[in-house]
Amino acid sequence: MDQMRAVVAFHSPFYTPLHVAHRLGAFRQEGLDVSITTPPPGGSVDMILDGRADIALSGVMRGLVLADCGGPRLVAIAEVNSRDGFFLLSRRPLPGFRWRDLEGARLALFGLAPTPWMCLQDVLRRHGGDPAKVITLPGLDPAAGVAALSRGEADFLQAGQPTAEELVDAGAAHIAAAQAPGVGHVPYSSLIVTPEVMRSRPELCERAVRALARALVWLRAQDGPAVADLIAPDFPEIPRARLGRVVARYLSAGTWAEGPRQDRDAFDRLAGALVSGGLIGRAAPYTALVDDRFAVAATLSAGAPPPGA
Image (cartoon, rainbow, N blue to C red):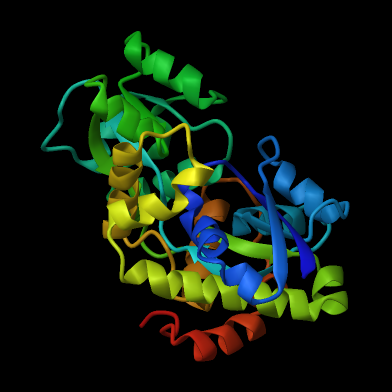
């Protein structure tokens, strides 16, 4: 067995495909003994850049930011998350919520990564709204954001899972909207490596993407409880029934890629949102930050559909 040190941006069921590949034994079938580590926010990129990890499941956003500031190059070799995984929570039910209702409202942002707010700004603009009219509460970790909503200091909270499901279960918040339908298809999270790993260990990249492709095919045929049963050992802090609901909500939103292929239009859509949101000044092209050869081969072997199918 060859060792593969994987890092994931956050410990969250949002990254279920990686855990499915691990728990199904797909990595071991490829001769890979995988360790999965969750560093502090932003640390996944640091770990692959300094050689403490071989591969990261992280946002393509990180590569775009580094390229914009002249930093080291990162290469996405497989798409994992194809939809935004964040939700807008309100203190009271809002069955008639419209995106422009955020104008003039106080929104507690997810403060550990910029992509959720970048994508939400893009949605607002496309629906005739003005992000500048949203009163944002930035820099909050999930616990501080929940506290701001509960104390009435925020009208809306931008939250991922399992936070959203926990608050709904407790009757402390209501889902006003999921960001996924508004944002559409973007390469939200991918398997990312350095050019050096891609050159020196192409067989690791090939085998990792093949294992992921099989996990994605398996996921398409499952429901929330079945997936929760498989990955529950990786999330002992989440009650099994709640984990099943989280996964079911993600499945219904089309959160996870149908296959590892990486779509150029989806990449350009995300890059455009980062530019319009002011995170980067200019977007590096798809060809600079994406290498799809491993995903093409894995798609053929796993029977996964091509991008956009």
